[in-house]
Length: 463
Image (cartoon, rainbow, N blue to C red; front, top):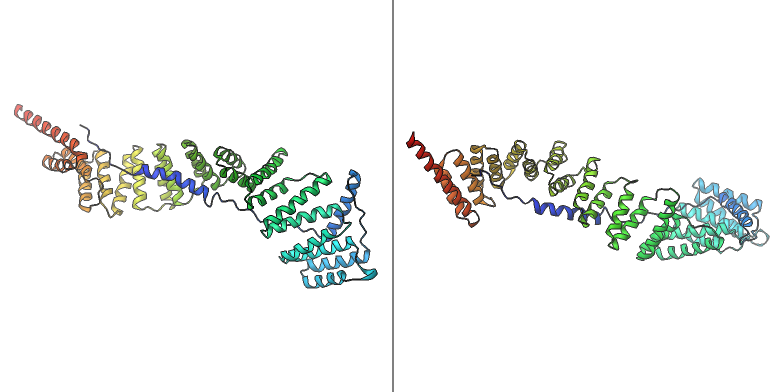
């Protein structure tokens, strides 16, 4: 007659919750897309002037639209340069006063359109440096109001204005200005770079136009890939978020797999595992999380516990036990009764009974209920330690809180039977019979025990 009995455990419910935890991680802080702050590069005055000259030369070479740009007079250039030096020395008020004097000149000393454009460009530089974005925007608007400035200066300033609107989180104006910039680039026959498409994508995302957002972020990513460059991490982040919103999980998986070739992060492995779970690819889900684990990316108790449950879900209890055991020894997992119970059960499922017993014994000692003592008794029974099994079950019943007292009585009866304490065994089996779920099994044990006793008597008479 079989001497062991499997005690009930609740791992199946807990294993199912791991998939939900991974999904929550993916949809929560790990998956939230945040539009990165746009860094606006305001070019120094001299660089801007030189850029205008170069762009004008390029225009001539390409025989595209050109403008006759007035020259900056030497004295004006010197004054602008002096103001710029003051700004770079953080003497902002002095720089602004100097610019005000230049701006207010009248008559023959009045500034021409190109001089005014460079003056307002320097105003904008100062205001931007001071994080006064409103006045920086006003100054840049004045730059593009001036007639006869180089196309390159107008194009660059328009792009900077769009960036500033993004910094101010004025998404609608930012998008509209950027579209104007796109049209200017088209008129000049110049290509629009990946970064501009990515910026426009972010603007559309903030305006909740996900279709256009996806369209432009994919242009940006494709542009980089065709040039043999690695797309920026946040670009892939926005792309996969937009596909997730479309419920295209297969595409999200494809993007994450590509992202992980270049950007190894725990959050991405968690997201990939969650998406595998959505596609019912359970083994791949476990493999993704295991990859993060072997790279020491999982260092929090909850992450390690869930890793163990994932291993249990695909019936690899030995790995589950090793995760918990290593975590406890590294003090990443607190040796609570619950965690030690998990460790003990994992070792038991891995048929490592000798390693399961001390963990379950410690878990039982730390518990204020009898349930773990009952489970410990069952493990002792499996290991043929019948006296310890009986003691553990009696301790469980005395403490109370045993989920299946009838099953515990069966274990106690089997232990007492093997110790040849037949009266105690019969008493335990009779207690187990009171529960319908254990009635038939208990009666079988009583019948078996009666046959054994009869056989022993017969043998004794023959002797």
